[in-house]
Image (tube, rainbow, N blue to C red; front, side):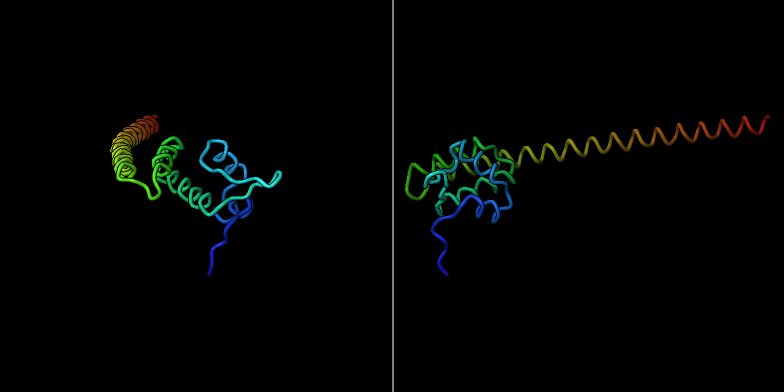
Length: 138
């Protein structure tokens, strides 16, 4: 089955479950370059692929600037480059490192919450015990 050659903004929005406003934003940022027919935007297969990559990069935590940098490197050649692949690997390693740090930070916060919770429980038990002693002596 032959893939469609062009797409409307509403077709892309529906396919990728994003708003037309988001797509126009990516266009304003220079990440998409649809042709125009009057006021109508006509998106190519390349624009569709770029939108897919923008959204994938977003899910992976890449900024739009990082995505633009990768697109710019890709546009320098017909099929990408070693430079682009090395940059992408570097971005992946940086993102993985940041996520590992976040996991460590989360683990530390969980330990602190466990400790605070235990102290609160002990204080409540102590208060209940004092209340009970007071009630017994009255």
